[in-house]
Amino acid sequence: MKNSGRNSRMTKQRRLILEEVRRMMDHPTADEVYEAVRKTIPRISLGTVYRNLDVLAESGEIARLKNSGNQSRFDGDTSNHYHVRCTECGRIANLKGVDVEVDGLQLGAACGFEVVGHWLEFQGVCPACKGGRSLFENVKRTN
Ligand SMILES: [Zn+2]
Ligand SMILES: [Zn+2]
Image (tube, rainbow, N blue to C red):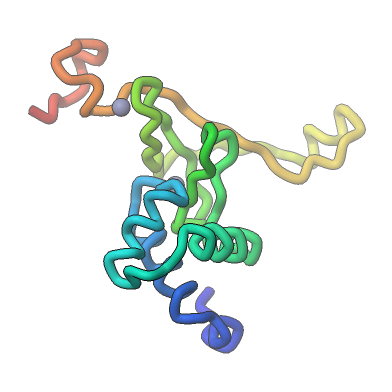
C-alpha cells in the first residue's frame, strides 16, 4: 500500500499530521490532532491541521469516521474494521476480528439500489466508564 512516489509531494506538516493520526489509536478529533502536532510544530495553526486532515481523508490516507458527533474523528487505520463507541464518554475503540459479511450487490438487487457502502457501529461502555459497575460480570475486570 505504500507509494512513496505519490506521497513525495507531501509537506512536512502533512506527514507529521498523518503520523500523529496513525499513532493515536483513539480516533482523535481535529483539536486533539492539533494538540499533538503542536508539540513538534508549535507554530502550526488549527486551520492548517483541519485543512491537512481534509486532504488526507479525501486521498484515503486516513478515514473520517461517520456520525462522530459535533466534531469529526479521524482514523489512521484504514483497514476494514468496525468500531465500538462508549455511550458514556464517546470514546471509540477498534473492534478487530468482527466479521460481518454484507453482500451489497444482493441487497441492492432487492431494492433497486446500487449499494456503495455501509456503516456499522457497536455501542458499549468503556472500561474507564464501567468502573465498578457489574454490567458484564463475565468480562474480565481490568482493576
Ligand atoms: Zn467511556
Ligand atoms: Zn478505527
